[in-house]
Length: 118
Image 1 (cartoon, rainbow, N blue to C red):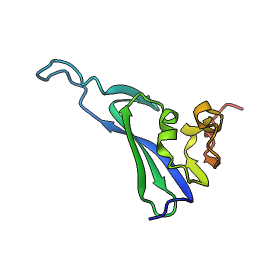
Image 2 (cartoon, rainbow, N blue to C red):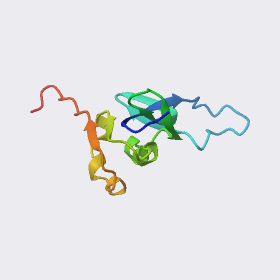
Image 3 (cartoon, helix red, strand yellow):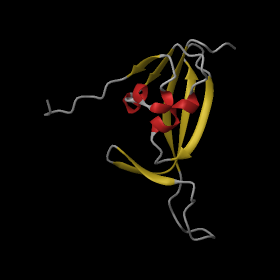
């Protein structure tokens, strides 16, 4: 399968029990808490890169839940993309030093306006 046109990137939180009621009496050190909206989550995050045409996942990276999505963006690209599409959490990607050599059209959603501001 040829994957050259574009990549869609996103991340999702994988919940894990935050309880210390286990044999070691501690939380899993590879997992952390993060806040999304007004909700706290504990666990890991799956960062994925999906081919825009076929819908097939070509990249998967797992991190602690508190890892920012932008930190893994370079690991989700296969290098043959013409464009990268992402949600507003990836704003600033074109200015990142580690992505300076990535020659693509960045299709990144704008952050929604907050009511009462602006």
